[in-house]
Length: 413
Ligand SMILES: *Cc1c(COP(=O)(O)O)cnc(C)c1O
Image 1 (cartoon, helix red, strand yellow):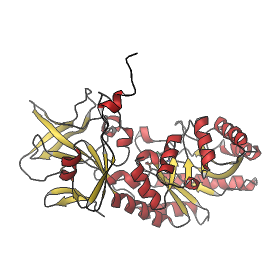
Image 2 (cartoon, protein in one colour; image 1 turned 180 degrees about the horizontal axis):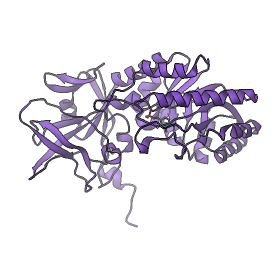
Image 3 (cartoon, protein in one colour; image 1 turned 45 degrees about the vertical axis):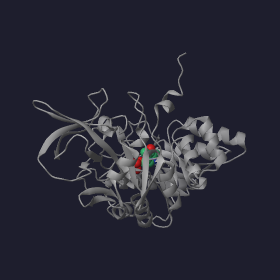
Image 4 (cartoon, helix red, strand yellow; image 1 turned 180 degrees about the vertical axis):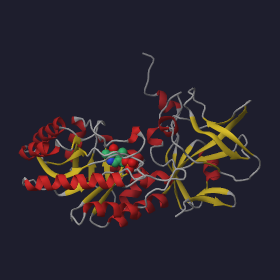
């Protein structure tokens, strides 16, 4: 499904011209397509089968309206904080479909999750296991746990989003896992449910996911031989998407790779997909402020900046940039940059843009994941609004921050 495409030379989100949203809401603004989010979720859920719990990794896009779309589609949720749990519940998500990941779970967040009755804690260390046991005891509960193991496979992605190598901070080394499972089995207030892993993000090659799954199966057999039973395997997320010309795995490819790795093993599976569900379902709409024509270099200065979309500055990530009104004309090569006082404040370098002029609208594509959620207020820039398009209608699902919003938390001492 093409949810962002040109009609009469104007880029639309579903049935809505992006120019109409810019005129109404202003720029910069994030625009999401409900059909794209729902369509991608359903595609994965169908490919992975009815026995899979397909969770959405909330950290990729935590807007309440986005979570609502996914909750209505039947999604579970992968959270990394108590705040994300509150969002999921507020959006109508089911607590008993929530998995809780993260290397530094606080006591307050663990209590919140115990009280809500989540599906599973993915435990990342021995001290965390003991803390969960103690807090569950205090609350008179039994905590469902999986150990997040680090399978030590190289996901072949950007080092900042690689998590499954033994040098990364995430998870329990897989060789150490049997001993920790034995400890867990002896604790009175936890109940062993699964084995979990997550090896990295934006994975384009499925073989590391298969390798990780095979290592989990081997661990499961070791544990079963010791009489420790495992209810599910959680294979994490990390499926990559196309930003430029990458060959991203389809949901069917992914499901096939997982099935092959499991080699006939019949066990409930959990997935934690973020980027693959929402990455291509959103754009950041921005307006050209100035064209700065230099000696060797041309700059296209836009009103969005690195504080609104950090991925290019943080990962040197590529985002396609499309004119909202396609009108041809001479093309020139620009660095597309924001107003923030940092050289890292760019969206593209050496990018060819046709017929662009000050005042034009540009769409920074594939900004639905790790976009708004990573935004901040550097340079005292209020965070931008978010809009959800549904057919020919749209709703502002987060209003633009005002300077009063920003300053209201401070005083002059
Ligand atoms: C970030 C994260 C995910 C989601 O990763 P994507 O690449 O967005 O699919 C899943 N699980 C855990 C534990 C994560 O930290």
